[in-house]
Image (cartoon, rainbow, N blue to C red; front, side, top):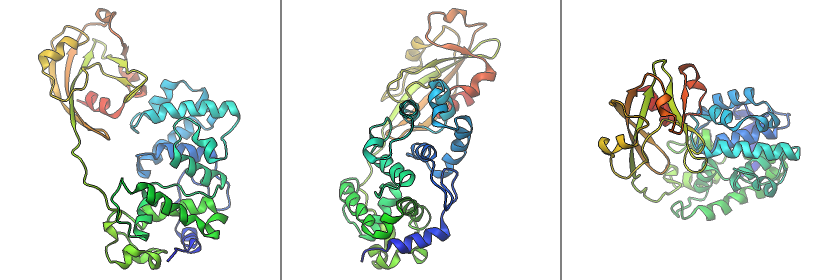
Amino acid sequence: MTPSASDLLDWYARQRRVLPWRALPGQVADPYAVWLSEIMLQQTTVVTVMPYFERFLKRYPTVDALASAPLQDVLASWAGLGYYSRARNLHACAVLVSDRGGFPDTVAGLQALPGIGAYTARAIASIAFGVPVVPVDGNVERVTARLHAFETPLPAGRRALDQLASMLNDDPAAQAAPSDFTQALFDLGAGICTPRRPSCLMCPWRVSCRAHAGGEPARFPVKAPRKARPERHGVVFVLEDATGAIWLRHRPEQGLLGGMTELPGTSWQDRPVALSDAFSESPAEVTWKVAGQVKHVFTHFTLNLTVVRGAVENFRMLHNQPGFACPPHAIADQALPSVMRKCLAL
């Protein structure tokens, strides 16, 4: 049975979440706010994003303000949200959008911008510009898999599931209210059709759901067994001068954490790094003391860092080292990723 878009939209009208980037009933969505929220929400939860979004929007209230800001300032504002290539693409996208005078209003036009993939383009197009398309995030994927009791394990079945999700838009009621329909799908997955213990009795689509009829909705979507996450290792150096300043450096623009600020350290390797080897890569020949260990989980690997600490009277001896002295009062304003803030906390 095909689920009724009208039933979902009626439920959404009563139960919709109030989010800082979401237009209120009767209002027109702001493309800048929609775009910013969608980029922030990639691989990140709503609860985590909300305070970042509000601070970011206060500092950069328009796409023009964001475009004119220095990249390092944008990276510093983003610090803690992770997946830092998003921040670099966000800035590059803002520059292009500002130059052209606004966001394109088509899926193809949006997807041509930096940092905007197929899902994000569809989300912005439907929510901000009323384009009748279905963006398939984890919530929509889960709802669709349960509606059809979809047995093919993910990620192998993802393309077929995407096609099934697109059919949800065939209902004329969905095409008449693309923005609300998309956000209703998001809210259904986030609040009712949750990964564990879905609230099926409160779901407006339960009569159409094959997984509910089969009595085991939480089994869907079926997922292939996860591979063990590999581990990597390194050593970082916290070097402080007599004023309390810390020696920092910028990472290369390309690659993981590209362009962010970091403590100097060794490369990250598949095996633990011997301290005797690591000291040959230290920024200064001083007495180093182990401060502790930091573990940080990235998407594709777990990083284990040994944090060592040393002191110098001043940083003149580091004139040949890449980096800069950061006084204590300026640490909070640096574009330090979470893993480096963990190291400094030791």
